[in-house]
Image (cartoon, rainbow, N blue to C red; front, side):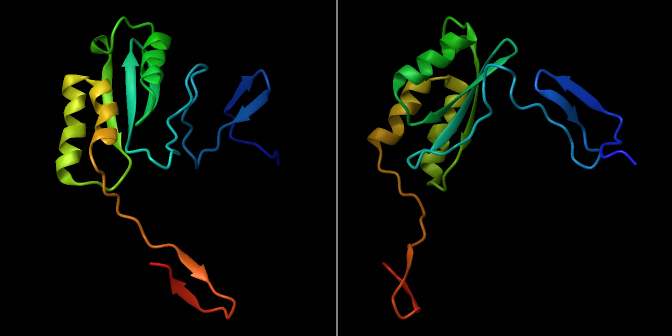
Length: 141
C-alpha cells in the first residue's frame, strides 16, 4: 500500500503535493498575496480589497501608506475601483460596528483607518491570571 493513494497530486517546484480526500484542498496563497492573518494587538478589523482577480489584505488601524501600497499592488487607480469587504476582528460596540460596516458601501478606507484612532474603543478583555508562589490562582484585576 502506498503512503499516498489518493491519486490526486499536484506537482510543485518543491515536490509533489498530495490531496487528502478527507481534508478539502483550498488554495490560499496566489503567489503574490498571503491570506489574511490578524495578529496586531490593536487590530479592530481586517479589510479585503479586490480588483480584477487579485486580492490584498490590510489590518485596521494601519499606516495610510499600507492601504495605498495595497491598491497599487492590485493595479487599481483608486480604492473606488475596488471591492471592499470588512471583517471585524474584535468584540466592539454595535454603534462602532455599524460605522465600520458602512465602509463596504462608501469604500472610504482612510476614514475607517482613522476611526479607531479617533474613537475610544472598549474591547472586552478577560483579566489576566497570575499564579502565586503557593500555587493558588488569583485574578489580577
